[in-house]
Length: 109
Image 1 (cartoon, rainbow, N blue to C red):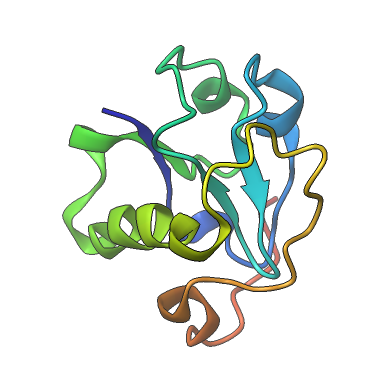
Image 2 (image 1 turned 135 degrees about the horizontal axis):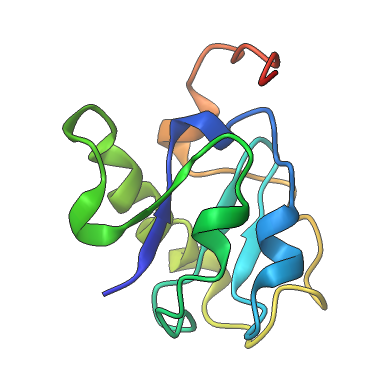
């Protein structure tokens, strides 16, 4: 099981979750952040600090955002498991599903 970052993060990328993650498993794409499913230790530290409520436990992802689970997992097909997001930085790309989304409203209040 893992945590999943869904639609509210797209084009926002607040990064408060990155600061809270004790295992550095939240990676940055061009438009969204992604949680590495094999590096995540399911501690849940990221979920309550997300200001746009984009992080969900795998089983709790709302149905309308179910595709984000697949995007979070498949994002790492090319990247693999670097063992820490800090040394990778912005990957410069997104999962095709995220990349194809229209620009998201940046007002998260």
